[in-house]
Image (cartoon, rainbow, N blue to C red; front, side):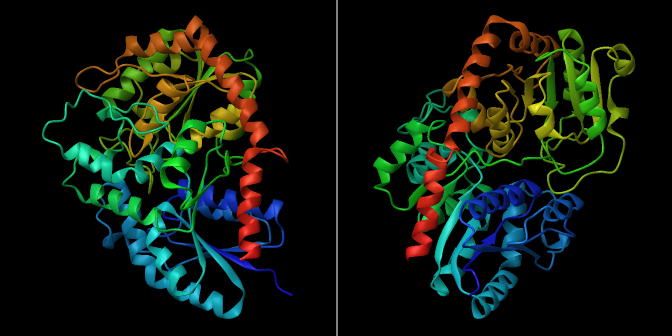
Length: 464
């Protein structure tokens, strides 16, 4: 008898494809009575990173690329969340067709969609399937979704003091700079889509969130009290990649780290899509040089758009944009690599003692799992929200101060790097992060909170 299927729909972009499939891998490892079919939308041809990753999947996960959406259909200068959302919107007819076909051939018990693929939840209801949202983000983001009506009311109030923080039950106080990008312009399409996404989440049978009880206990408990357990929230994290997929720079990075002292290197990377302006790139280079700390820096060609590399990369040598003489002057202390490094392995290396990070949730969780303290440098999307949580809430990060023009200057960079790597503040942060590392490991043990949540989810699918 064929095993029951779970249909999974990610949204466009490598950083939304990997989390939902890593969740699928863990689910099937724990509950092999299921199998997964994954319907993958993409903007233009699927990137090589996605294809390489799919080749690593076990045989009980069946990936299927939907016909790619032409880049001409999605405005390249639109907000990143709009590009992701529109890619899914244009893919909806293909998602529906493949889902109906799958249901006609096999026993499909549930539909699990990435939060940016929420429109596909309609097909779950049409086909009488249990329908879930997979949220590859924090419980704090989920709280913002659940409290979106209240948030909209606060932001639209004429009498509101913008210096006053916004406080939701169980959450760190949020200032305007901490809110996700779409919330900064209430008239924008990105903000309207944010509200729509929030509303749709509430209609699902459940939400699988890539966090764990010990990391965001106050937020998760408050959500349950506020909303009475409907939809059901399953904290199933931390779900991260076990290995980075890619070859270039890998051996060079790890060989160089092997030669360094324990916890002596700060790893600098802005994720798979983050970019800095030329002026900010220069300041970061000079700041690292002034800090006198060892560093491993993944450099990307500069751009005035912080998310420029998220859905596509420019083919050029980013090292040419570094300040003249920088590589020669820092040769003894630093390693600079273009565009990519094996992040999972770098963070797990004993020589890595800090992470200057864009605060994407995947990177935050990878840092937590390895117990590496963070320098929070958010760029776009909900990264400022994550930065507030890890800096002000969990206190496992430092955040450099920007000037009035938004530039983080070299002296400030040098100061926070030294503070994190060898200061008293850094020692306290490292101790707290070590505690979270142990909590993350415990959550994924046989009797851990996240494994219990995963089992509750599987049992509900099995028994319904």
